[in-house]
Amino acid sequence: MYESDVKVRRLRGKIRVTVWNEFLHEKQDLEIANIYPEGMHGAIASYLRGRPGFEVRTATMDEPEHGLTNKVLSETDVLTWWGHMRHEEVSDAVVERVYNRIVYDGMGLIVLHSAHFSRIFKRLMGTHCNLKWREVGERERLWVVSEGHPIAEGIGDYFEIEHAEMYGEPFGIPSPDELVFISWFKGGEVFRSGCCFYRGKGKIFYFSPGHESYPIYSDTNVLRVIENATRWAAPVERSRSVLGNVKPIEELP
Image 1 (cartoon, one colour):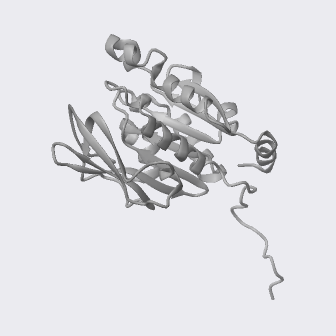
Image 2 (spheres, rainbow, N blue to C red):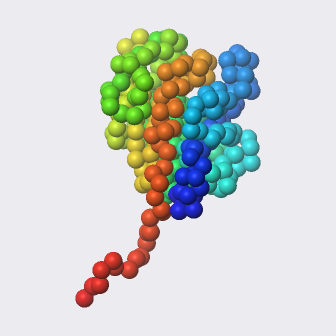
Image 3 (cartoon, rainbow, N blue to C red):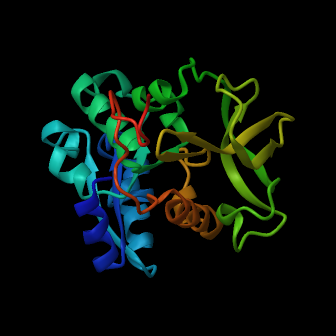
């Protein structure tokens, strides 16, 4: 994050959020469209707009440059990402642009549900990010395992989602820097469902609930977690680090 960008954010006093969505399921499936008439991005954005301290915009896959132009990203403090069917269609240029904005400028990234397979998440993790899955609409119970973490603020010991897609271990990610939630599913599996990572100046939170066939983004606990994670992932206000060849701070012999 550049110094001028820091000053603008401090003056505005708001966290600038871009809610990104592949936006394909809602166009192709009437049942999903009925659950999310404004798209999953619309549901998340609507909630955040109703909370204090956010300035929210949306972007989708089929917009020019996937809606993630240099200008949009320079005006984004935290990016949320939902994708499923079109991961490989995200351009190299956009992946590199988002990666650099996170690692060098400190933009936060909230990775939702099937975006564990997104190109940007795999780039940041450096692993295959694969997992077990099953879609039968079973109950998911999410346990807080880091009760002092700001992402768990306002959440009890656990909360439940009545109908969810099962994601199960092993989950092919590096060990999280911080683990906030572990899920149990009625079928017996467990999953690291709320994981924090630090990459360069950027903070990343992976949160697994959010299958498109269920109204998960109307669940108050799920939305509260996304809100908390967005606040946590906002950039630290400091100038961009100087990298490459530098002069010594003190005189050398």
